[in-house]
Image 1 (cartoon, rainbow, N blue to C red):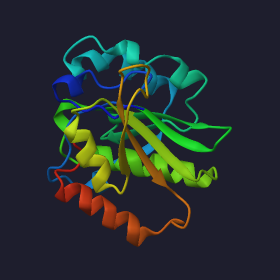
Image 2 (cartoon, helix red, strand yellow; image 1 turned 45 degrees about the vertical axis):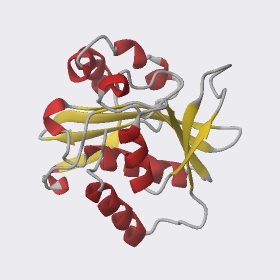
Image 3 (cartoon, rainbow, N blue to C red; image 1 turned 30 degrees about the vertical axis):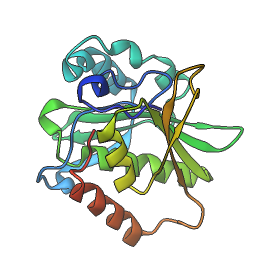
Length: 202
């Protein structure tokens, strides 16, 4: 995944080799007014229609149908008042049981409202339920907002040279899930850390 956020090059977000978060999240909004749920075909159709406007440029190619039809079992959306305001395309790599975040998008009017944290928590819960031991995402060098966001949620950060081919270094995010069996206390703590960091630099 490339967790690319909604800042400049960060706007380019992630394509198939990174996760992209299209927005910044962190303002005051009651999360009880929003809910996280699985992605449906109607959600996917809405996302591919709206994503270019959310992103501010041509981006719909990142939302490849593969991430609904073949890899959409664990994809998530956040809904507010019946409207999709954020989505996360992620999947579980079966051979290694790694939960991988590919693409995250947030409605421009819902940035800085903790949507990113909600999406990540929902996906992490699915990964735990499926027996995953690790979660993973990647981004390009210089995407400081993505780095801050992942660090705030307890992810490790490592720069790996030639990760995407010769001369193509990437920032690789990982989060071990063992010994973290669903703990509301820990989860709320990491979400608070994300909020304090400017939450969802997505």
